[in-house]
Length: 373
Image (cartoon, rainbow, N blue to C red):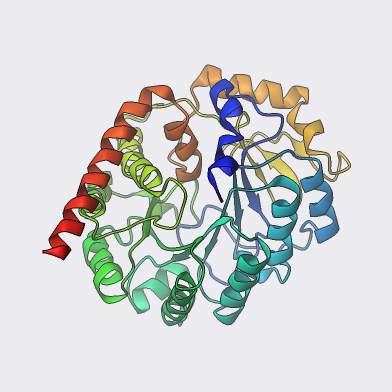
């Protein structure tokens, strides 16, 4: 997506007001093939009340342009119509950036779904994150799925071939730190980077109320130790991060800062930055419930009950109360997606972003000159 796809949202970003969210997280399914110990959705029960494609069309038509859309789950590729869902928002809301996380278990279905989206949603900055939290059988144990590691690796390698054909496609490995893998994080990272050949790694920290509460009993210092290695590798260009996006170095700079912010939030247990949930961002669950954030249990409304009109919910009294609550209480969490907004859209963070961005640029120049030599 070109510069215009991003610049059209500048006014909303400055005022922190949007007629509908510019950052939307949509749980298109809460069903999953795995049973992860750190999953924030808790005990898994099959859901049968997911929004249908015609309902999603109505919801999308009631919304304005969207800067970033995350189609998540559950396992998003369980939905046979995932490419149609992506296309609906592409057509109606001019999405600039699309992200989909996956555990990689559905293999061919993930690859074919990605191809369809890339062909139908021309020019959109599109990324898939394949979750890999450990190596071999240990990964399978953490995600409650025997044989998942091999399937995830296969899916990752097949998706990587698409990067050669589509210059708007990014492929990441999502590594989630928890108490269960914190003593092996460096080993896991080295495998992903050096053996698998992953050049973009999304580093996450267990949040919310995981299926196994022990998952959150982590040592944040161990999380930060790998964060520092990722910072170093990004600046030295041995880890490219987002390379096929508009403003890719800016995004990589933000991710470096985000790791530091998460560490501070955990250590200090307080708000570090303003939260723009319910102002610039929102969450839609698979049954049409609308929340400001996946971690804040304050429902704004249900889209089925409002004739699929998102603006009716976004502008109701409950939404106004929630915005006031978030501001007055200085609501905070470590949810990476919404911290992205807080970092990129808060003026006091601009000098830090610029510094990290400049270091990344310098690293690329140095790396290029070194390779030439």
